[in-house]
Length: 58
Image: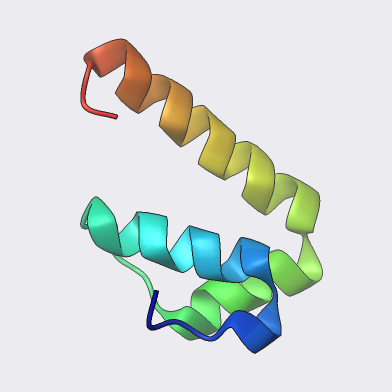
């Protein structure tokens, strides 16, 4: 995945997803989101996945 997996698999998943779909952000932002509010970050990811599934682009 070429991402920092030492920071946690959720952070790596978030950064790979963000990169794949061209969502602006950074590794530092991904780390902070997962460190300070992991539940919110995972809910955000899930909502975006659902939205893309509804649009047929996931």
